[in-house]
Image (cartoon, rainbow, N blue to C red; front, side, top):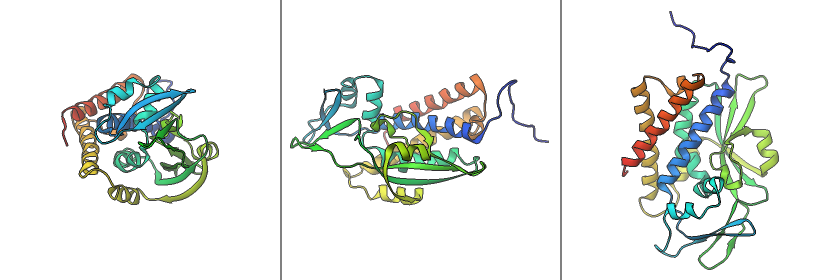
Length: 264
């Protein structure tokens, strides 16, 4: 006979929202690691004017390393903003498989939302090689996750690249997200459509494939971690206290190990 999941004394029952919040934090941390590995912004300089970060596009190969760019940032939050700079499409297309794997035991519906964002613009202003400032209204992608076991159903926005707009909590109620940040909801599509659109992105030859390989390496790290510790991701989300924190750090360490040795 199967035993009920362990529940520590005085611990509240593990709700779908709690599990989703934990998963969002894990996938967010992994996305930062992914971007650190694959960052290719091609910037020659970062400077602050009146507290605003300006990022300057480089010409050819005259660009700074990721470490040099992060060293120019004013604090950890700006480092996060820089790492996810123009990263919403990758966040959806390349972290989607891990997200879907994590929510497999949560009764929910996952779609991708495209929206035109409100002012103010991103935490940074892009300056082209000709010195022009890019002030176009940003179009942004993020996940919409609807929990189907709640009455009424409740939807959340999961935005892994929200740091570029100055928001550092990846999971918020969808209605609050739209009210505070969105100027216009453009459309909703499946993850499959979003991944196909990413495959059509123009980039340096082989770059899209390389980034996809890095994302696959991260998923491989997850499966290695599951086999090593004999626990599935969905089960880990239900653990309590220090046990959950320990397993989470072990998973993130496993991702670091794979990204450190992988050439993809």
